[in-house]
Length: 186
Image (cartoon, rainbow, N blue to C red; front, side):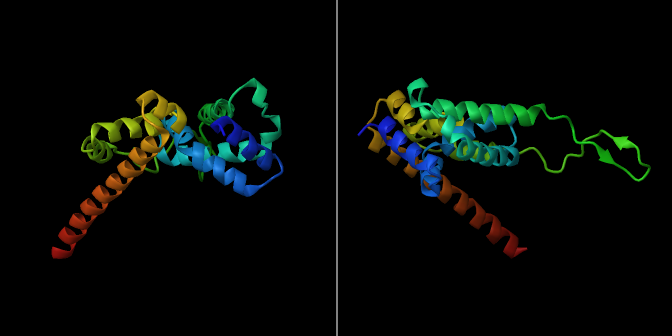
């Protein structure tokens, strides 16, 4: 059975408001959509919120999806892009101060994320792991598009992703353990 056919069956279930179908689509496409959203807004917290909003819209608008007009990912990609663009177009929030004047200055509540450590951890991965992670999480490819791009079987590609994520988790665990040990000694 083709991936497209699998999607159609899941979408049929979703149109009947089957939450498990939404979870399946989320598992399959959230990584690629998150990569697209993050590249557009360059804010991890906002990207996570917009990804959630994207899947809420998918849930609400699934009846408008027409498989004869294109792939589900393309439709979901357009929703993610529009949700993100709409969020980026919103004017700055106006904050009222004690003097009842409107203050239009934005207060930065969180520092801009520093991806240096993540980039360093990724650069220590094997080249095929780096490429797999890059295709899915930074360039917005679906697993199907990515494995075709890499020219490897789907199972092999998925194991590359799984191995890379495990190595990144272990890398961070190790670094966090060292930091914790250093803090304990002081």
